[in-house]
Image (tube, rainbow, N blue to C red):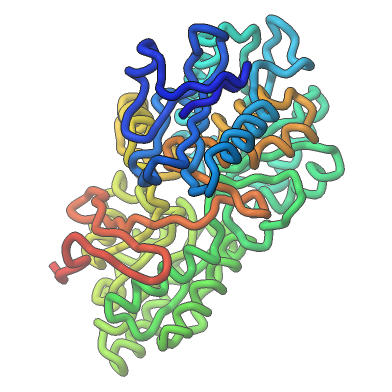
Length: 476
């Protein structure tokens, strides 16, 4: 049964003009011929779709989740009432012919510059797709994006945030890193600004009620996942090497706690300053610690977890000069998973292959939106994009839909984002935000560099199961 968003008419089946839009248990927000409304599916009599089934056929679409109710009449009342209460046409404070500006603070230089390039391609593609969606509906306004370079610097990110505010822009995509988000948070909160970040995941920033939303899971998910992976691979002693900032310190703590809970031991490791230009001293100390632990435990029992950004390339180049560091396993986080900088450099790529470098990234949805973004990124960038690009696409789409639903008032957009996200299915699949405005739990892809390329090796299922397609590393 279907209920129209605009007039509350009930339909037992889609009209012929809509029937082509339906696949399995899905439905798109296409116009009804009779009333130019939107359709909301009541699925109380239908089986719950799987994550792979529940995708929308065009960007920025809503879909109801299946629930079982005792009385179909109650379901109809609830769904129709909800549909009417959140139905987006266009908000009264959005003027006909208006172009609404949102900000984008992206690292186009600095330690995350290569990721910034990926994110910018995905976010601009999402913007184009969203405006096409508005055009198809004859909605008389469009969305545009003012892009600023954060230089991967918290100080610069704050400067760009204040600049956007001075130009009357209160809705911002980015910044990407948790260190940048922490630095701009006070200003954003006190100036009634809304931030949607694709990539920040420090748990210390998971604060209910603020204006920061993150299309990424926090470290409380990734830490245990990486610990389970290393223990699964027979690592008894973990040596962390980490970037000394909000993101690195927090993730190191979560991985350490989880690894020890699983029976492993953790070396004190090496904490480095984020803008370190030369890692010679740090790598020399690491090589000596690895040698001593390998002699005591066996090299197959010792593993390094590198928690950093693009500086991983320089670190790997330096580490390649030490035989002891090539005899143990290396692991990484989502910050470097699927990233091009490690495979574009021949020395770093060869070292990553020799140590069986393995990392994790969020598992995106297997659906047409995912494929469309992937193909677009391949065309524009000439490389397979990391999972962050799918978070970026969904961030822009959800923000745009919230503006469509609530207008441009930051407080109204802030209230609308969780409701929009709850009914949105995009590149990441069927998403939902928790009370802190962060992406709720999902699975991770296990991904590694082998023979100069990133390949998917398996999956980590939330709760502790590591499912591998092939052995992660055969020592060759």
